[in-house]
Amino acid sequence: IAKALAVGTLVSGSVSAIGGDSLVLSVSMSDAVTGTERASARLVAPKGNMLALQDTLAGEVARVLRPILGQEVDRLISRAGTGSKEAWDLVEQAAGFDRQVEPLLASGDTAAAARQLANADSALAKASRLDSKWATPVIERGWIAWHQRHVKGFGKDASDQWTKRGMDFANQALAIRIDSAALHLRGTMEYIRYAFNLDPRPLTSDQLLDAAQRDLTAGGEDLGNPRRAEALTLLAHLEARTSESAQAKVFASQAYDADPYLADANETVWMLYATSLDLGDRTEASRWCQEGTRRFPDDSYFTECQISIYALKGGPKPDIPHLWKVLDQNVQQYPPADRDFRRDRGSVLVAMALSNAGLRDSARSVALRARAGQSADQSGDLYYTEMFLRNMLGDRQEALDLLARYLAVNPQERPNVAKDRTWWLDGLRDDPKFKALVGSR
Image 1 (cartoon, rainbow, N blue to C red):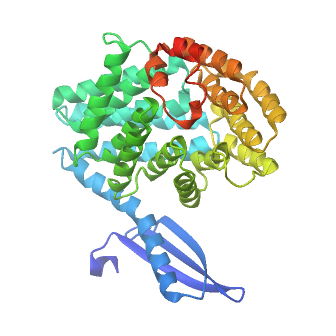
Image 2: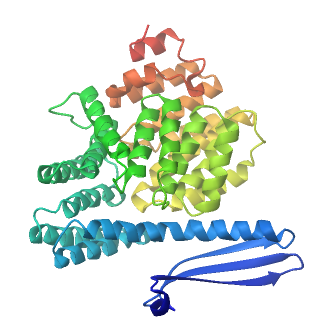
Image 3: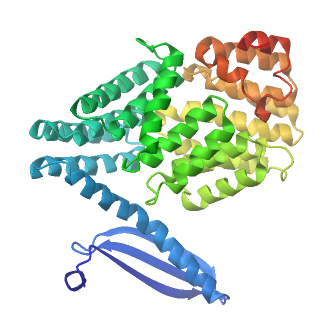
């Protein structure tokens, strides 16, 4: 079939009945040359409406096939940039090493994941030496540095090292040619350095943020950037962090539309959820949490959203024992080095559900237990998350004390907190002490 039709991918499927009124639809996509399965999907659906069933099956096949097509398109674009087949083969080899990292991290084998990242970086370095005018392997070395966050963590020392490395590669690529993909890489590193309050020199913090926004915008506007959707998603994150929730959702929606191959769909759907949550839009937040849970059932984002959605008032009564089980599942989805922090943060989110269920004393007890583990939180994020909880509980003085601690760690965030108009700070932003802390009048 592959030879006769000159195709690279075969799609096959089967239908079987279960029970009296349901069908199981199984679809598999395999490499036409090697026969290796590349992706699969399994649907269980009622027999009743066959036309609707056909639409569902077609949509599911498209969802599974699109990322594979995207990988092939990226390969073709990448190959067009060099005349050296050996250099191109090394970039392909590096991509293979990189693809093994996520499964290894999911299994808890951080050491093996680190080795694969090192192998990928080594292959890319060889490719660069073979074709010094080809920017792609240099840019990809920068993204390997970005992936180090999963191995080395988000501690300030580690983040300082891998962001500097990523910026160095971005600047090396830009010295070869001005490229939106390289600007996107540099903007990513600039934004992380801003967000983690790392030394911004030779820029000020505000200038670093502006530089990140410019570089990410260049990456998001260029239709030829293979990571365009990723740049738009990070722009959404930047806008949300700087208290521009509505604009953040616009960028997230643009990212969703700009990702024809669903390469970054989990990140984008998460931002659509997070911005909807910040805007207090329960309907939209529920929609994107459910969509993410359906499409990415093993993704930590969408186990967390099943907890944080209960921070919004007016919804169904939370099943607290179930939320603790969801938190256990969520914690296990992170590398071992991150799990203590994720459990503490997730516990504060469960406490928000407890507060909305009327169990205020229990919420306070959970918050105090979570705070005891804050030695693992160099970013001060737990202070900020608990501040939201304390505001929900009406513990205003406690909330303000937590805000003071957060701003002591993150002084660059003062203007962002000052202009925050989300529901999270309702009732707090008019307090004179709040205004004094953030420098507003």
